[in-house]
Amino acid sequence: MTSLKVGLTGGIGSGKSTVAVLFAELGVAVIDADALAHELTGPGGAAIEPIRAAFGSEYVDQRGALDRARMREKVFSDPAAKRTLESILHPMIRAETERRSTQQDTPYVILMIPLLIETGEPRARCDRVLVVDCPESMQIERAMARSELSRDAVEAIIATQVPRAERLRHADDVIDNSGPPENLRPQVEKLHARYVVLARER
Image (cartoon, rainbow, N blue to C red):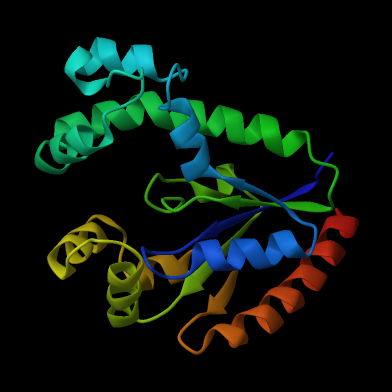
């Protein structure tokens, strides 16, 4: 049973997924909250019927999965709808994250939660908060490069996330991703060694 839970977070385009892969390559269990959300809202997922009840069948596609494009448009324009969707998904994601983390036998587990700070009380979900950080200008360029989102769309997403300074204020550990990709691995390996020691001391 895993004793130490590390919450990995960062703004859009910060490099969270890249860092998570590096931890996984070291044999660390990584639980991805976004992947869990996709499972829950996929065909026949546990969140589908509550979503149908709250929003109507037009938000469920022919496969029995969430119509992501329609829902994205809805929640961006309607804060109440966003809160409703979150009230359905967040408790399910938290419960499944907790269940999976207790099943791991690694010294520690990485919980990759993009909105860890935004959803409040990060300490209730993990023992340490690890923030992947880079300047906002780099976030925008990276997010545009990896997706088909426009600059305005990326900036709109950033505006819904906590400011960079606020995220860093919650951090126990920070990975600086403002440089070239090869700078990440040494930082991950250093933190890995620290987390193994911390897990043993618990």
